[in-house]
Amino acid sequence: MATRRAGVLGWPVEHSRSPLIHGYWLARYGIDGRYDKLPVAPDDFEAYVRDMPRQGFVGANVTIPHKGAAHRLCDRLTSRAARLESVNTIWFEDGKICGDSTDGEGFVAALDSECPDWMDRHARALVLGAGGAAAPIVEALTTRGFDDVIVANRTLAKAEDLSRRLTCRAVPLEDVDAWLADCDLLVNTTSLGMKGEGAFTFDLQRLPPHAIVDDIVYVPLVTPLLAAARARNLRTVGGLGMLLHQAAPGFERWFGLKPEVTRELYDRLAADVAAS
Ligand code: ATR
Image (tube, rainbow, N blue to C red):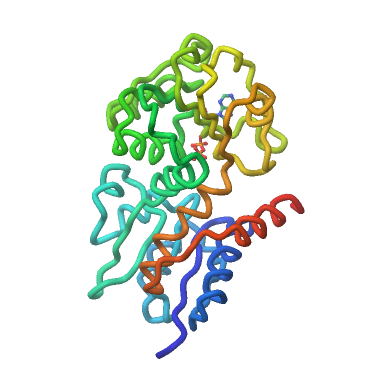
């Protein structure tokens, strides 16, 4: 059988750590496959994807700015990808382009792995941000059974748009302090706290002692939000786990084996991020 190819489609895609993750699994399981960065401009996206099977590709990850275009291009979608109108994983089946959105699954799998009892209290989650990263997380939290998911965003209209499409409530970012007291899970999906970006101003002291704080930003590995939460002895989850766990369903589709997110892989990725 020919070498099975996969990769990550983005523009730009130079920063992607997906080749490190999939390359690790291909080597670990001795699979005859390869996974590459695939820089493809938006105007070329459709033609490129349609030609992929001919080039030996079994599928690909899709990242910014192509997730919406991939959703429109797919002949078959999982129900969550259809709901989210976003696709981050494609594969080819019976001559059809198929798509899924695995970010939400990655998010909850990271919590399952790092805070196994996180669903013991699931009355209220507060999600900061209403951009592309927020939607799959909101969807995954409500699918798992969180009773009340609140989305706080600087631009309220974007949170309101999310609340029309998914089961959540929209509030302005400046109201966050008022919602922290009853919050079981606080999730940051904004770029605040990322290297070179701004910082949060709200009062973490208001969170209850059992609250879990999850920041999907992973550069730096310990964001200012996570550092503040740890200083309060709250449990924290960083973004690397989500990055690793969202990759696993694609690998399984393409190469037929459910890969393990090992401590060694986590440490390799952390070292790569720390060196950047
Ligand atoms: P992504 O696809 O990664 O979610 P995005 O769609 O650009 O990226 O969304 C970025 C999120 O970070 C948005 O919720 C954005 O708020 P707005 O919708 O108001 O733009 C939020 N964000 C970015 N910079 C911010 C800042 N300085 N203060 C508050 N929120 C910020």
